[in-house]
Image (cartoon, rainbow, N blue to C red; front, side):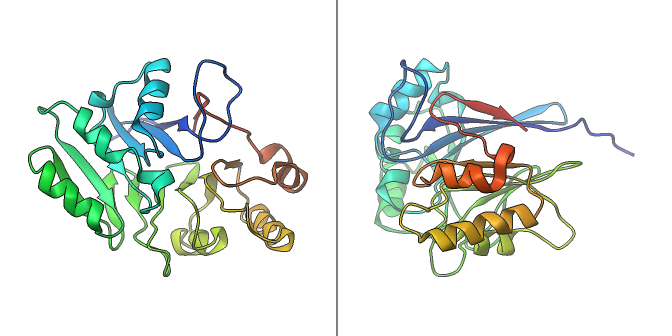
Length: 247
């Protein structure tokens, strides 16, 4: 019987609206770097890329990361604050690098990428549950939102759910993603609380409480941090650009 080491998932915020650091740039958008150490191997994924390659590249450099060390990019949906840096990023990647690009649906940007970078990029359309790496998969587009999320199932802890903007609604995303025998461990990413009524936000947070989640980490377009803190208490982690969490 094969024995596997305990997986460690590190998530670093590269692009977001807030930061406690003075040496990085903030902007309206989202990009996260996920690094999964499992069974003696490391799997690295860039989750969304934010609106600007200039800002993303600057923050990556400040934090000691290089785009040529990444071979998987996950675009949650085709809104510019999540994919805007993509074309300039791909232009900057070494010609010797082969990138796997995971997208929810094709659009004019994906066709342009295929035309310009046929030898540099392989596009995988995640129109259903799609494996990304060990323990890691795309949910496929949820509802009519044309947005997919990332599910990482950490043995012994539970599911880490990474969201881009949660246009389908966070409760719907969780119900779609979590099986009855699974434990929700962490939710991190954009919650899309900015334009939601307070009653809906409260209902979502109480749902998270009822799921027994350990960490609630709202980023891009989430807002209402005081309300989140009031309801989920010390499960709320306030991260910004340059912050990392190891799960």
